[in-house]
Length: 139
Image (cartoon, rainbow, N blue to C red; front, side, top):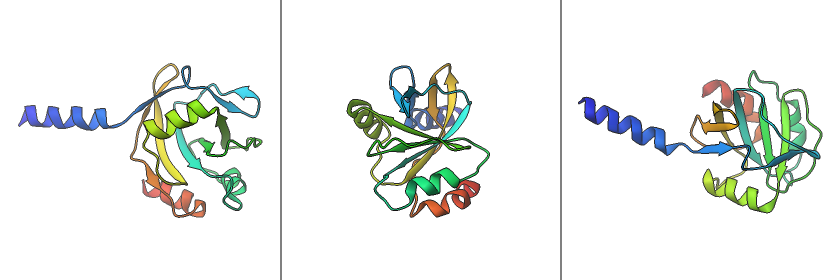
């Protein structure tokens, strides 16, 4: 029984992915993003969907949001949301690493060590961003 529980825990732990912000460079406006908080909400979204960036800028949650745009548009950060963009190589690696198939998608990360963060939730698709604060409370 103990061996089965250990094996299951190891399987579940290995299911979640890591992101190292020293190796994958993201930009906020023209500066390189350097994480400061221990936990973040990652929202992968498309700026071509109407009012998406405005909705993300208005969301006020206890955990800071890192909003990663598929189209890499530059956007000024808001109080609780940091808008990130990256080069093509980083964008493709991010999408592939986390198996992102939908936009907007959301998941949590938490600091593992220094600039290394570990995925801390399943990746979920949101039907629309207006549901974000409601869905976060459910998770």
